Every structure is written in C-alpha cells, then in structure tokens.
Amino acid sequence: MGDRNAGAHGLLIKLPGGFVSPIHADTAAYYAVVISGTLIHVDEEGAGADKELRAGSYVMQPGRKMHIDKCKPGAECILFEFQDAKADIIPAKRNEEDGRAHAP
Image (cartoon, rainbow, N blue to C red; front, side, top):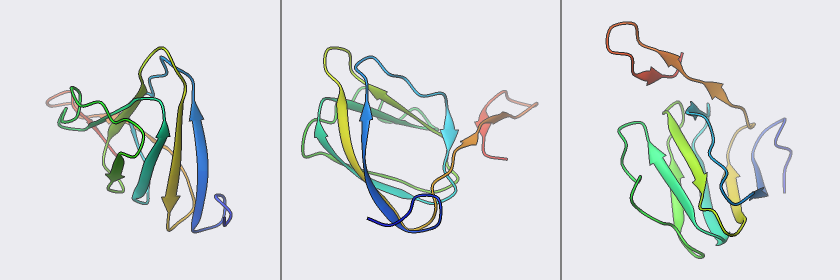
C-alpha cells in the first residue's frame, strides 16, 4: 500500500532471528504491529531493552528519535509497518560532549 520511496505507505518487514539494527532514526514516525516472532524495540534512552513484543504487539517510534530494533534469535520477525511519509534511515551521530547518539 503506497510507495515507501515517495510518501505514505504500509509494508511487511521480515527480520531474521538474531537481527540487531544499528542505532538510527527515521525522519517520519512509524507505527508497527508484530505479526510473528519476538521484537525488542529500544529507544534512545534504553527503554524497552527488557520488553519482548510478541505477535499482536504494537510499537510507535517518533520521527528523528534514535532507536534499535532487534529480532530475538530462534525465529524471524514479521512486522506490518505504516509511515505517513517516505521511508529513510538516519544514521546516528555521536555527541562529542557525552558520546550519546543523536539524529543529525
């Protein structure tokens, strides 16, 4: 539904078991539902690191906020994700003063 390279879109995302994304942000917020597997979604403050999101769980990630997405080993994760703008990834930059990751 929609075109992820042009604007609002929804899509299924498959992450292999054991996948760990680098810390990053997306320009637009995203809204996702876990279809299968176990997702661990960690925000820039570290919240969520101990919370397992199983099938039926919902996660909302604000735009321009750093986060990490992990798929627990043992089974792939399938998510349905919606964004109201085109998809992108913003790699983290490190703050020279405290070493924390932030969106440029």
